[in-house]
Structure formats: C-alpha cells, structure tokens
Length: 289
Image (cartoon, rainbow, N blue to C red; front, top):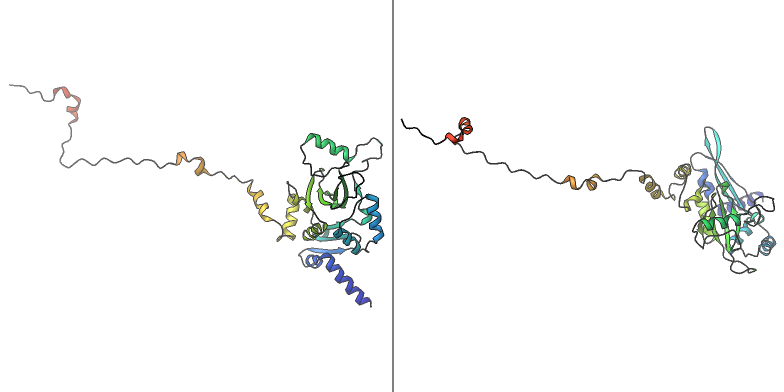
C-alpha cells in the first residue's frame, strides 16, 4: 500500500513539474534537486480570499491551488566541492498572495507609500496608461518574490469602485519599480517558469535591458536550446567597430588614370646638339670668305 502511494505521488510530482526534475538531475554539475510537496488548498480558503479582496481568481490559477497550495523547488550546482543554490522556483500560497502598495512602507503614519512614489514617477516621466499603478486604478498581488530580484504580480484593473475584478494580467516589477508585461494567463507564466528552470534573474529576459553577464552565463550553461542566443550575439556585435573603409574612403579609392606612354623615337633620327641649343640665334648664318 505504501509503495502504491509513493508511486502515485511520484507520478503526481512529475506531472506537476513537467519532468524538469529528471532533466536537472541529468545535467552536469547539478546536485540537490529539491521539490517541496504541499497539500492542496481548501476551497473555502480560495473563496475567503476572493471575498476579502473583491477579486475572482482565474480558473487556471484556481485549479492550480486546488492541486497544490503554492510551489517551491530549488537546485544547486557544485563548485569547488561546495554546493551553491542556482535555481529557485516559487509560487506563493493562497495565504501569501498579499496585496502590494496598499500599506505604508514604514510604520509611521505619514510615511510615503508605493502609491505616492508611483505618482511622483508618473509626473516626471511619460509612462504608458496601460502599465500598472499602485493607486486605486489597479489591485496588485505578489505571485512570485523572484528571490529578491523583483516581483511577479497578478494585476487587476479596477474600472469601477466596488466592482468584482476579473481576468488579471501577469507583470514583472523590477527592483527599480518599473513594470514589464509577461503574459495574460497564469498557465502561460507557469510554463515559462518551468522552461527557464528557475535560473537567476530569468525574468529580465522580458525587460528592455536584458540579463546581466552572470545570468547569461547560467543561461548558456543550463538552458542553451530555448535561450535566444541571437539577441546575445547582436549585443556582442554592438561593441564591435562596424566601419567599412571601402565606403568611408570611397572617393579616395578611385582607380588612378594610367598615363599613356609616348612611342619611342624612330631609329636614325639625329640628336640635337646641345651647343646649338644654347645659341639659337647663330643657327643658319653663313659667312662668305
């Protein structure tokens, strides 16, 4: 009976992780692939969360929580006989799906909040209207803490006060508090999460400034197939001098005109006497004796 239960849990884990545990275990240098099994969230917990926040969870995220109340997986790499954590995949539980920007940063009553900072940045720069805001225009919930490199959030758009919010989008908030769109659905984000194996800073692939050099190294080592190496080569080429001397000095590279050689003098012609050439006035004068 116990063996049957273990086989069921193993099959359940493989389906939930889409087999990336075996892929990581077979990768060179990877050790300690750990997946934390969690109990499914109870349905009344989901209902209480929706009533408390005035939001309706999308069906794909709701079904995910009914299978497991959150997700946590990590793996290490052995360097110099010492394991260091490289990959980390986290999805918050339903109880940790907390709202962002609603409270003050500090406990002081007059301390600035994220909504105040959001207003200041909007006045100083021309941000697009569809981007999330920390004020009453959006309801934002932290889905993935990204190991301190930012936050992945469920973003609901509030059209009318008191209206139940539906169909959230998923955005990435970097450490400079700039927003970057990722996907429209949770299932699409979940696939991206597993596809990138929880590598450090993989969310910055969706930003305009891209990955750091260290993150690119980890990408090339453990994700060489799905990682877009074309963009990496373009960035490297951007630092190379692309001047074409043939185009710059085009006017100076014209073929020189060949001078026509004069034909040699015919044989038998008399040479001019240099002495007579010096005194041309005496030529042709005869004296009578």
